[in-house]
Length: 236
Image 1 (tube, rainbow, N blue to C red):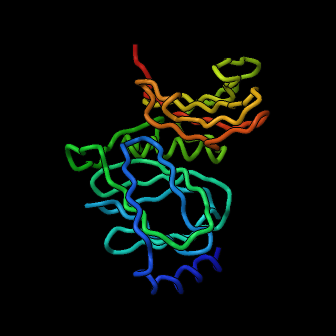
Image 2 (image 1 turned 90 degrees about the vertical axis):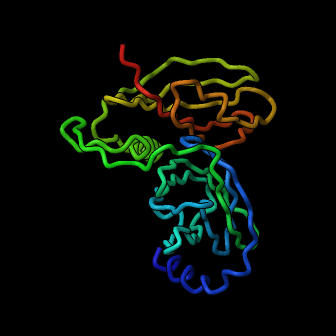
């Protein structure tokens, strides 16, 4: 990690050489992003500032700029999920894939209007401080992906049940997390067919689903991936 940070600092002086890519997003959804595997990249949200970035340890080095952008250097070729929060209250995630290319600037453009500036909510959740909803969604998703039990949630493991979908896909519930406001689900996806399949997060996003993330977007025959979902808990 120190080597990554050092290399990142050395490369920042060449910012003008980056290519610009525009990527639209909606709150609490995941978008695919391809970043250079050997050059620095810049992430910026149009008309906004990135205030928080959550990702698995060791996957990349970051440097925050005063203008609200992030300079990043990837530390792994394996796909991972990056969760971003902005000053105006946007929350979204990106499935990051490494590619052999020059460094680039990714400009995220929101398709979601934030009505009010987020306020700090003071309440209690299982005797601990309650996070604003967007932060709570990102925290739960990050915890599930990193295989850590989130604080304030009841954990339940599932065995044996298989849901058969189209095209030979099989969905097996593995773990669920139940909180006061949100529930989390971890499911295994298996391609039992004879052809590779491209997965679409929209397949798994019902009305009560707040966020979806896939560990892989393409499944070869006999290959497994994991589906992570954050759902709003229904109160009857």
